[in-house]
Image 1 (tube, rainbow over the protein chains, first blue to last red):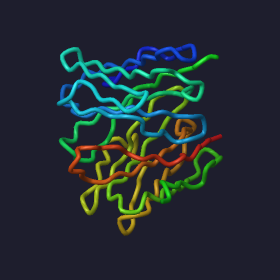
Image 2 (cartoon, rainbow over the protein chains, first blue to last red):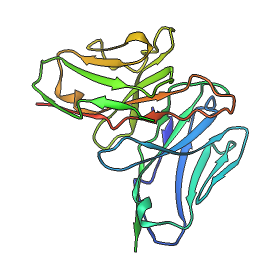
Image 3 (tube, chains in turn orange, brown):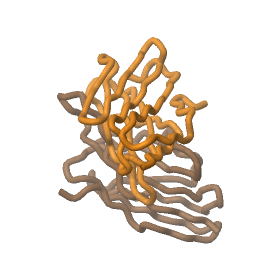
Image 4 (tube, chains in turn yellow, cyan):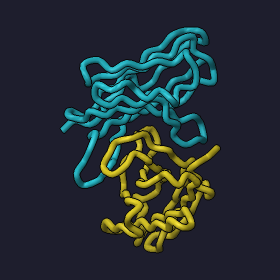
Length: 115
Length: 117
C-alpha cells in the first residue's frame, strides 16, 4: 500500500521554464513533508520541507505547496536549470512537531532540464 | 563537518552468504535510520535508532535482517543468508532527535550497493 505517490515517473522541461513535480499521500497522520533530490550513485540530498500548519514554503528557486484537504503537495522550481536534472523524491513524516521519525518516500520523478 | 559515511560503497556476494554494512552518522546526531532502494523503487524504511530507546524495527523485511548501533554512533546492518531479492542500494541517514524549529531533515550517506549473485 503506497502511502506516498508520485504518479509521474519522468518530466522534461526547458531551461528557464517552471518545473512542477507532484506528490499525493493517503495517510492523514503525516504532518511534515520533504523533498529530496538524488543524483546517480549519490545519496538523496535534502531540498526543502513544509509543515502541515503551512501551505507554502519558499527557498530561492524552490517552492513547496501543500493542499491538506486534497492530500497533495507540489514542488515548483523556477527558473529550471540544467543542474536541476535529477530524481526528486517526495517524503512524509508523522513524528510530531520537531520530532525525528522515519520517512515514507514516493517512488520518485526523474526531471530532465533541456537546453 | 563530515557527512554521513557508509562502507563499503559496493558489495558483491554470493547467495547464502552473510554481509555487514556500516554507517557512520554525522557527529551529534542521535537518530539513525536505514533505508533501501531497490531498482526502480522509492526508498523503503528498514530500521530506526533514537538514542538509548529500543529501535523501531518495523521495516525489516525478514528475520535475516538485523542492525545494531554501538555507543550511540556507528551502526552495522547485517543480512544473513543473502538472497537475490536483497540486491539493492542500502542507505543510511542521521538526524537530530528533536529541533525547536520543527525541522526534521534527515541527511543521507552515499549508500552501499549490494549485489547478490
